[in-house]
Image 1: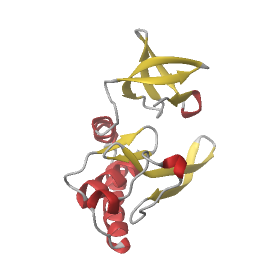
Image 2: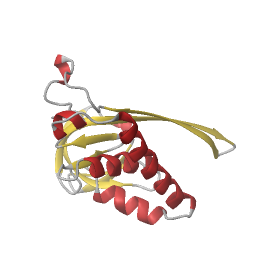
Image 3: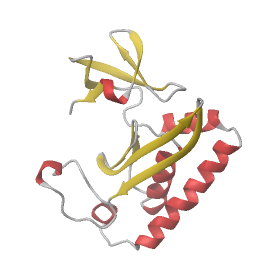
Image 4: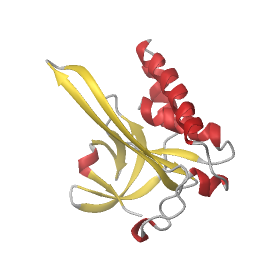
Length: 169
C-alpha cells in the first residue's frame, strides 16, 4: 500500500490538477488511464516478513503505446503536455516513499488504510467484474487488513484476492 500511495502522491505533486487514483491492488490511474504498475515480491520466514523487492513501472515521457494499450495507458508527459526530468520524478517518488515508510514504521496503519481507501479507484461504486468464473456487478468497498479487496456482490460482502477477480471494462 505504501508504494502505491507514494507513487500516487508523487504523480499528484507533479500534476496537481490531474485526477490520480489507485486501482487495487497496484496500478496508478492518471485521468482514468494507467500510468504506473507495481509488482512486489515478499520473502517470509517463520511467518515474518524478511524482505520485499518492489518493481515499479511509471510512464513518464512515453508518447506512444502498443495498439492493445491504446486508450488505456498514458504518461506524465501526455497528461502534462511537456517532458519531465526523470531525476526530478524519481526524487518526488523517493521523498514520498520515505514519508510513507516512516508512517508504517511508526505504526500508523489506520492512517495508511484510510488514505489508501480515499484514493482508490471506484471506491463505493459498482463495477463489472468476473469472480469465480461468473460475470457480475460488485461494489468496491475497500481493502481488508490482509490486503484483499472488499466487494459487495448481491448484498453480500466478500474478500477477494487478486487472482480471484478480473475487472471488465
